[in-house]
Amino acid sequence: PALGLFLFTIARDPLRIIILIAGAFFWLVSLLLSSLIWFIAVRASNPQDEPLQKGLLIFGVMFSVLLQEVFRFLYYKLLRKAIEGLVALSDDGCSPISIQQMAYVAGVGFGLMSGAFSMINLLADSLGPGTVGIHGDSQLYFLTSAFMTMVLIFLHTFWGVLFFHGCEHRRWWEIAAVVIMHLTVSGSTFCNPLYVGSLVPSYLLMASAAAWAYLVSGGSAQNLRRFLLCK
Image (cartoon, rainbow, N blue to C red; front, top):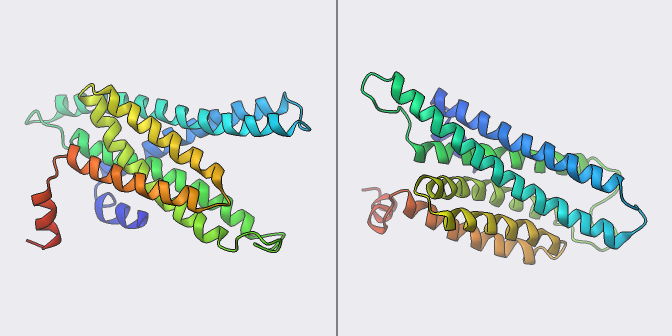
C-alpha cells in the first residue's frame, strides 16, 4: 500500500519527490538525535538495574515521538517559506503545489522512512540466529510487525495532513491531538507480545485519523460516495 501511494500520487511529480525526500530526511535527523540521547542515558546508567533500563526505554520512545513532532513543525515552517518563494517566482502569482498537497507528501515521507527503518530491523532479526516462537512465543512476530509498520506509515501520512492543517489555521488542539495519538500508538507497542493490545487500537486510531484528515482536506460524504460509485 505504501508503495502504491508513492507510485500513483508522488512519483510523477519531481517537486513532490523532493518534498518527500526532504520529509524523510527530517524524520531521520529526529531519529538520530533521539537515539543519541537514549544511548547516552543508557551508557550513563547502571545496566544491571532492570527497572531503570525499562524506564529509560519508555523515556526513549516518548522522547523520540515528541522530537519527531518538533521536526514535523520545523518542516512545516520550511515548506511555508518555500511556498512564499514559489509564489514570488511564478508568473501567475500562484504556487504550483498547495499546502494540503505538501502536508500529504511530507507525511508520506515521514511514514516511508519510519517504515523502512522498522523493516530493516525486522529483516536483520530474521537472518538469525534463532527460530521465531521456539520458546512458545508467537510465531506471527514478523506478520504482526509488518501490519504495525503499515499502520504507522498510513498514520504518519494522516498526521501530516492534520498537523499542517492545525498549523495553517492555528488550531493548536489539532496539533495536540496528533501528538497524543502518536504517543498512544507508540505506547501501545509496550503491550507486545500481546499484539491485540497494540494492533487493534492502532488500526482504530488510523481509521479515525483517516476520516478526520479527509474532512479537513475538503472531503465530504457525497464526494466519497461518488468515488466509490465511480461517478
